[in-house]
Length: 485
Image 1 (cartoon, rainbow, N blue to C red):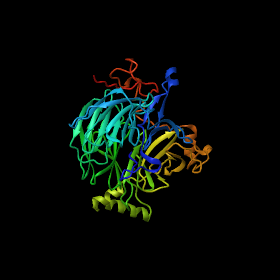
Image 2: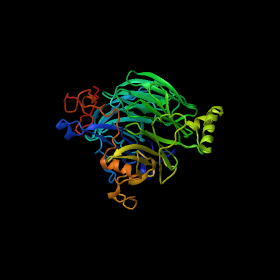
Image 3: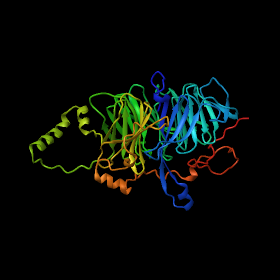
Image 4: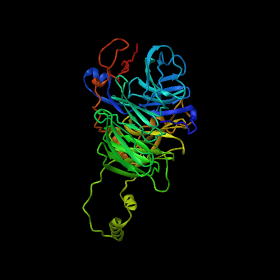
């Protein structure tokens, strides 16, 4: 997400952007060679700054491992495009040609395609231009110019979405051709949109109104509108799909209620109350890989984690105490209360909470399983990545385990715990036993959704190989090569 202030100034450490890559499972090479098919979750963090962009591996709590860095200069991108400018609104394509780009500074958007080397970049120096690069080869694959400032870029194995303030462009990830354009959308100055990472449920969600919280759901495979969900009374502030693409979490500008809807039906599945006393600005929503937890961060010091479980109704029992009788009367009286009050009785509360050491900073959160333990990750405009442990059985307040500087430098003075204790029991012995045995494994319905033969193929490869591309491999070729005569 964009971490710059409203005036466009960078956050601490010259940070402009931070985002976690799309959650994905991939087969490890050793296991693939042995034919075992063992899978592991790959997590990484992309950071854009005044001087370029970086990628960090999130495989360990102790260390924030930098896996790539692109600073402004000739060593980042070896090929550049010559733009064909046009006055019309469709994006204009630039071909590959010799040259060196200088747009790798002031990176305000950097989106990595899962764990591949494909990356989409937008710079404040050229806010209308999207560059698609193969960062490990140091090559620019293509670039497009649009009629207005690019506010957000979303991508999965099928589609690449470019969000402008009043339009959305849907590209085919295989060859980057524009498949469809959604024009004259309600004003969306924040570039709010969400794209499902699931191939079978490849939906796009974006605001359907600038005055109320309508969500427009669009099928990016069949290129047609799927549904319109009246989610909130106030304008939307945050959207997030789960890994299966069958659930969509929404929050409004009030920030007091979080709702979860089924996709594409639009049926309300869950409703959670974040707070009552004050309205806040929701910064981000994020599901866990198994879809059991949902985190919501805001401009306050508290991150709420909700558990998506349906409580089985027990047969009514006759109260035996005065308090029990009073509770029964109170619940019975809700049918006579205003609907707003009745909804408050039925809304779920946070299963776990996190107390951040700051307030007022833009931030983005993610729920990940690192070293077999569920973690909440928070990247903030104060220049730090915070790692908390989540107890999936008891919930409660999460423990801060480590914080890392997002500029990649070592942080010794602010270490929270000794490195040997990062994977120790947190709250209860039952949770400690579960993590020690490694029994907590999210049962995501999409773990087997991404196979080797789903890599995008299109155009002529740089090495003239026609074999299928595997985007989860370090040695993959760019998935699209665009040339013009």
